[in-house]
Image 1 (cartoon, rainbow, N blue to C red):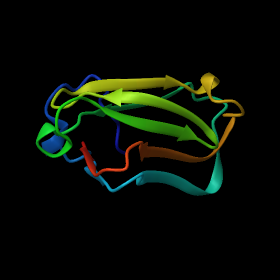
Image 2: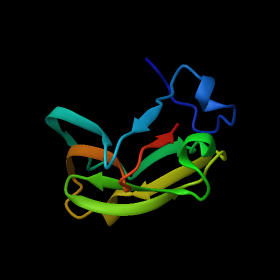
Image 3: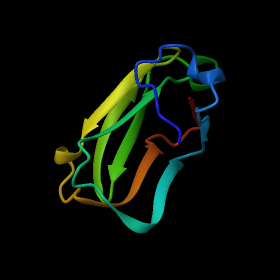
Image 4: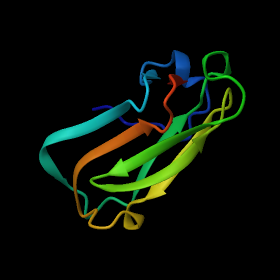
Amino acid sequence: ALIPNIAYTGDKKYGTQSIRCDYGSYGGLNLKRSKTLNARNLTYVQFWAKGDSDVNGPGDVTLRLKVNSVRKDFQILNDVWKNHRFALEDFKGSDEIDSIVIQNNYGAQKLVY
């Protein structure tokens, strides 16, 4: 079984457990299950991310995290890896999760790792 190493600080862009998201206008990454996930024993949604200033231009990228239908906007730093951690208790009704969406909050294309 895969055991994630949350303390790992190497470059995820080249790791075997990374995802590159090339977001189109208001596009998103939808992590959806065919069955509802029982999240009663889970406390956080956590991931590392960084933007790409060559594609995104100056300034940081605002993305939206949506757990079921509750949304929270957050900043992705360009060219700097940051660990993002969101308490599930901040998302009403998060005892059962149907989907987690990370969405581009812009009308322009953005690149995030």
